[in-house]
Image 1: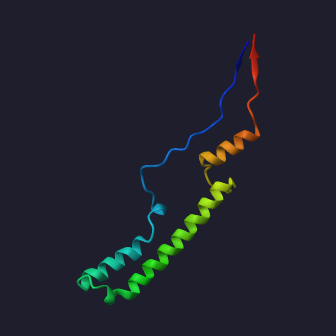
Image 2: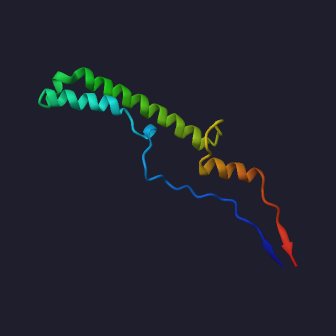
Length: 102
């Protein structure tokens, strides 16, 4: 007798394209480069733009860390698509019945 059973396991794949939310602080970076170009790449004249970019990037990394922590804990956020870890955890709650063929 052979058991037929589906393996309910999803393997995660990384995306090779960037969406708008994946690009951090694009406007601040543009302002910083414009200031640097206008001042012949002397950093002391662009202190305000450097500080704005650093603050934005720190905020972005904090948000990204919190989101990754939430995903790793397996919490399902309403209105979002499930990633492969969350989907695997959900599917383990409802196992596929095992059928024995004779």
